[in-house]
Image (cartoon, rainbow, N blue to C red; front, side):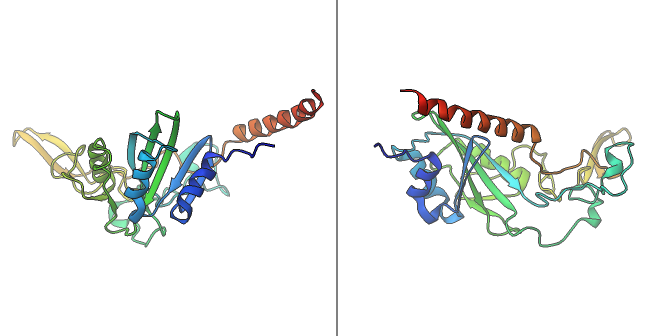
Length: 250
């Protein structure tokens, strides 16, 4: 009787052992997590070893997990007059800058996520690494392994303030000259800090403190769509019903 073939997630666990801090399969996608000191060596193994052969870095981005999984719904006294009526509006990015939260935040806040593609095996993989320090998040650069990471890492630095150790030219790439802060951080105000306008008296563009009031957008909440849960349950029933038919066939 042939031995069952290991799943891709099990092969990752077998190859990297305790170095793989987490291996998760969800929504037909596989995510593996490594510590910062294993970041480059692990991705080099995923690129070079014949079993994996992830030859291409398709994308690299930063993630801020501040307030992740914390919803802003107020369900006890909600009216039927719109989303804003049911939201506290006190989450990160939805407050006056001087009243921004200054707590420690989650144990692991800033992460770097690399999306790899294996043309050889027609497979994709998400690889994640958390920075150890909230105040100065640092992750090793992948530019020596994938030169295309250069601009991706500059974008993550610009938008999230993540520093990439060993990057040859780490500087902003999207925001304006003299921009203060990192706009994709969850504690960056949604209205920004400054606004730009043309001053007819000075006959030039000037920067000034933002003049609009903080506002609430669509409420943030992490949830699983029941439609996918129902589809999964129906598929499981179909698979279970098909098993006796397979056993009965010669």
